[in-house]
Image (cartoon, rainbow, N blue to C red; front, side, top):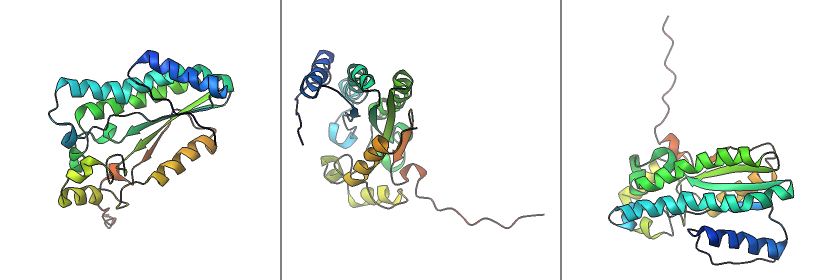
Length: 217
């Protein structure tokens, strides 16, 4: 299929406007926005957590999504049935707690909490012509797990702790993401402003549920 690759600095609002305009000039319309922009948040990769790191997390993971949504919304509305999907992370929920302490820094967690607010606000602004939803990812290959520099820096016990904390006992795959995106686009016409958490149950934790005790009369 025909495609267009445009290198762009998403921290530059003017460049974002130009990006969207190039898409419109090439294809004539914009039906779907997959808003997948982030810094990563790895404490073990990014070194000392100074102000510049904090600012970059917010600018990349949160602010850039806002500019892309702003530039895209008029064109999504013009189709009459547009779809926008924001990607976020369970860092918004768990922060630096449990095994996730190896994975997420505070700036990344704060930025992802903000993404959910954007999702709700833009769902209101987009309705009824545009559905805006969010896919909140857990620990995924090429994102925070296998295939990343940070994952390779963890020792075997740290990796095992992450998997033990995940009820489904594995990290996520790109196939999991593709299926979720296709569902939101094509099979959820009555869903907007919602967050789909795709984390193998990580947020629930690895604790087992005890049997129901006998009642006491």
